[in-house]
Image (cartoon, rainbow, N blue to C red; front, side):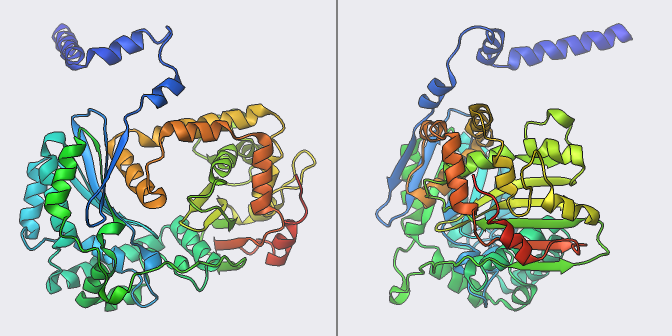
Length: 487
């Protein structure tokens, strides 16, 4: 009997090896031999092709030769384009998108997607909205047709709106239980108070209860305009075919605004301030500290990415102990400072948030904020400064550059398609990986010091805290600490 099982397993392995493409196996066998360098592989990366239709809609694609593809519509619309009255409309529309169109009722739409073995999804952020589908390359025409129906002909049935109202309210309740989301939303609310960027993507529950069908229609008519849209695709796609499909299904998208009422993003002023939601019943404190960061198009964004990589992240579930790559992570382990932390840089069209978020026990907050190491003043709002003091050799910066250089996030057609769509909206073009690589390689330790000093030294921080945060230092104390350290 055992011999029979072994024989079956052997046959399965043989079938698996036969079904695998030969090239990856040969590459793995030749791994020890000379092969194409990292820089050469970047130069040889597929080109991102871009075409603009007569109505202003952009069509961008990257052909990778995969048997599958991801295609989607990226739109310059999100919570930043909303007012206090209709905040949450974009997120509500995301829920309504797959509830049927004029041509395909909900059941028919679901059957169309399932029959293709495809995956249809969407997301809304503060500045972008995306509707995308991952499917077989041969089903690209049908995928584009369904996306055009979802975006242009959403039925917005009154009964379905009432049903989704309950779904949105339940999701709002779930998000309130995710303290990381709550803390970072509060950080935006206090950092950009009085501006649209301070609003959450989901919006307040009172809006979810009162939004009407006309509010949704007005939002679509105001923001879903061709010049603000990018039809992006990656995988087994042909650019000429995609352009032809775009002309067939999206040429009718309007590029005009009623009464020339073109929505213009108002500047979002950063305000150094704090917001605390003390709840001693919670087991851990969630704290975020940030200063105003660089915009998406700023040349300072690459050195800040390197600085973020130097600081890294940490979680109690990580292994490695003293062998962790981040100096700050090793310090967190040795001093038992926190349960987790992560550096972040959220960039928007004209501003950003540069900071750190951490979770710790209520008795560790003071140590976390004031920890001293090797004679260097510690975390008190110089979370970056204390760590950047370790950039005394090129080794630290080089190791961080290699982490930033590795395009792990672009593995697969969906992340690649998302990257293309967001780049076209942010920069008007897709920045090639080779160009990113060159900009990252140009970063020096002195450049990191200068850029971080520019954004951090003597700046007013924004602070958000949720949970048992009594030990969090007074804001004036944190603000004065921003002046103590120099590079």
